[in-house]
Structure formats: structure tokens, C-alpha cells
Amino acid sequence: MRRFVVVLASLGLLLAACGSAAETIAEKIVENETGGDVEFDDGVIVIESDDGDATVEISEDEDGITITGTDDSGDEVSIEMGGTEVPDDFPMPIFDPSEVTHVSTFAVGSGSSFSVTLEIDPDDAGDALAFYQDWFEEEGLSVMSSGEMVIADNDDVTSIVQVAEYGSYSEVVLSWTPKG
Image 1 (tube, rainbow, N blue to C red):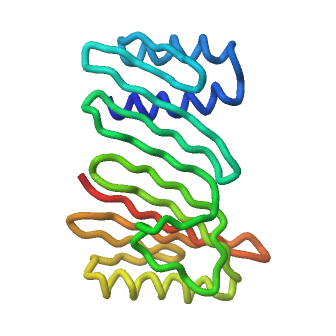
Image 2: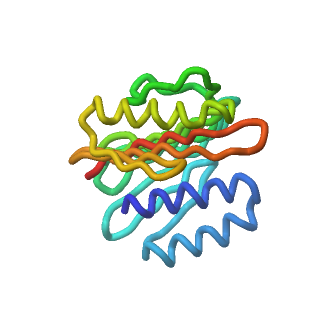
């Protein structure tokens, strides 16, 4: 059912952009996928099925879009996209000098997954990768490095740091995903 909550959340974003015609189509798609009844009511999506009930609520403010819901097991699911505020529970250090340009968080019962995008000077790209590789090693994670990417993991988490150059600036994308 968690997968369906994510499907509902994705369709909710579509609905926010497209209106009532999309609502009817989205309802049919989700009902076909889940075999349950789907209702859209004032920003809240409710699915009732033999497996249980799930709800999703979508809100938007100056910090981005927040999608919250409860799956059929009663576990809360939260997706926050947009904004530049790094959550207090983000486990990785932020490379300095950099500017945080985008933050996304996906929280479920097993923990929170994060994606944080930093803008840096292209001349600092190598230093940023080395910084994160050293940090992963200090934290006891297994590290694999390849070009503009560092991948680290252990029994509990997988993390990826990737650098992409865009001419006058580079982006560093930090990904942190718990296993399980």
C-alpha cells in the first residue's frame, strides 16, 4: 500500500496543476491500480481497499510542496519538496563553501530519505567529492568512487554524492537513504 500512497501523491501533484478533468482520470487510474475506491476531496485523497485505507494530503507554501499521508498499516508518510532549509535530522555535513538550492525529504516508518542539492564553484568540485569520501570513511561506511560520484553504504544506509558541472557553477547532489 505504501507504493499506492506514493502513486496517490504523484497524482495529487498532477491534480494540483490540472484541475477537475485530471481528477476524474487520476481517480480511474488509482482505482485500476489498487482495486479500491478513490475519492478526492479538497486536497485530501482517500483510498479504501480490501488491504486497508490510505490517505494523502497535499499542501503548498513558500517553502515548497508537502505531501502527508497514512498507509494501510497506519504508518505516516511525508514528502517535502522544495525549499532550501536543511532538516535538523539530515545526517551529512554541508560542504563549505556552498549554497543549498533544493531540499527534499521522504519520511516513512523505517526512517527518512534525503536529497540536498548544493551549488558550488566548479573549481571546488574535486574538493567536495574528497570531503564527502573522507567523511564517509570516518563514519565507517564502505566507499566506492568513480569520476564525479561517490557511493557509500553500510548495513543501515546507502548514500550517493554526485557532482555535475553547468558552466559557471556546479551542483552537488547529496542523497541519503536508509535500508529496510
